Amino acid sequence: MRWGLVVTALLSVTVQASPTSGPAPLRVTFSANGAVSAHWDFGDGTAADGVAVEHDYAAGRWNAMVTAQAPDGTTSTQSVPITAYGLSLRGPGAARYGRRAMFGGAVTPAERGLKVRLSGPGGGRLGSAKTNAQGAYAIKARVRAPGTYTVTTDRGSSAPASLRVVPRLTARVVGSGARGSGYFLTARVVPAAAGALSVRISRGGEPLVERTFHGPVRIKLDTRRLTNYVIRVAVVPSEGYLTTARALRANVVLPRLAVGSHTTAVAQLGGQLRRLHYAAPFGASFDGRMLDAVYAFEKVQGLPRTGVVDARFWRSLANAPTPSPRYAQPAAHLEVNKGLQVLYVVRGSRVALIVPVSTAGLPGKFTPVGRFSIYRKVVGFDPSPLGTLYDPMYFTGGYAIHGNPSVPPYPASHGCVRVPMWVAAHLYATNPYGETVYVY
Image (cartoon, rainbow, N blue to C red; front, side, top):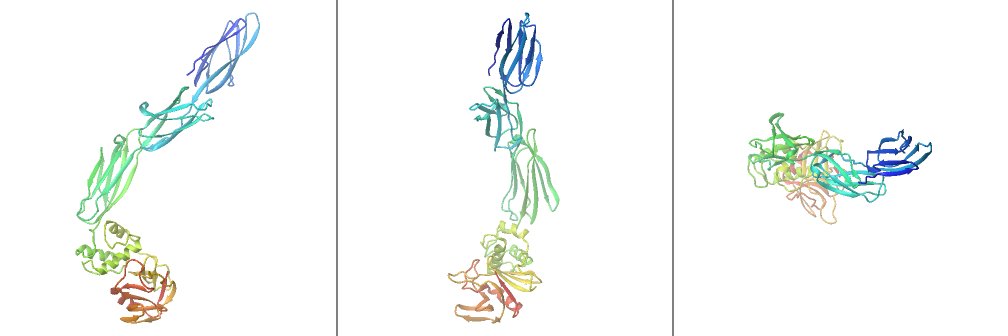
């Protein structure tokens, strides 16, 4: 900082000003020693009379003018330069813990290349920057504590800016969610001083846990029965911190199933798929028919076509809607969705059955798209140049919907629409001549 005393002689009058520079608001004492009267124009739009006066200057460069009268009646005018330095600070008001926040402001009078240093709570140095030609600066600093932040230069300091912090809250459910397995809610807040954790766990609308924890949380969820938990974790903030919350859902589901599984869970899987109108068999054995149904569900729901019923599959199954047909008329028709590789049996303008299919996938082969009608049906096996078709229903040219022992979860046919053998007979029996077939 620069502090000064200016002494100016006006004939028999001595003019003094102290200090002449410093941080704003800058109080300057003026005196006209030896004068009988003096008029002071402070240069900022204000004035005063008296041989000794004081004035507070805002940030800027100013030029004070004094007109003093000596005892012999003579008068003279003299100027005194004054510089009051100001430093402003603008902060975000609130920032996330551990994230970078932008602080900015300006020095007045403007000065290029002045180093500005940012300090946080406790006086720790957080960053620095130099001012541009307009005196402005910007400092990006990582925020780790609430409180007051200030900037300083060789010219002075800014007024403090208060900042509050949003703590980092992590909350997750650990485990597969399979019935009978270990399933836990874990939560913690960083920093630990940010506050306590309020935890609410409900099942079927009934609260099971409503507690506040002072430290990390680990709660075991009951997996003895199939159910859904709704969880809310919130920070009860300490002073200077803001609250934040997380909402979670945890589903207790049936175990991982794949071809070869034999359990009542397979029967329950089939029941849930049938309620959603997927062609699925009865029984407790996960056989090729159940694999077809699982593939169909994975196709429609956009899941990986693994043929395995895992936690992700169960979660999707618990909330899955029945898809809608693309066409509403006629009220009864068939739709082959090549993109999803499924066939919709539509009745009453709603999807009544979902069957996996495999359309053209060989090089140079295609399955035609458009609106067609079933014009020929052959019961049982029908030999063709490209192989034997089972219960074919021809809808255009030599293209048919027919049973085939191989219906992979991807396009693989010569052009026909393959369906599983065990579904083909049902489709044959329930779709008459003239039935509309959409392929898209």
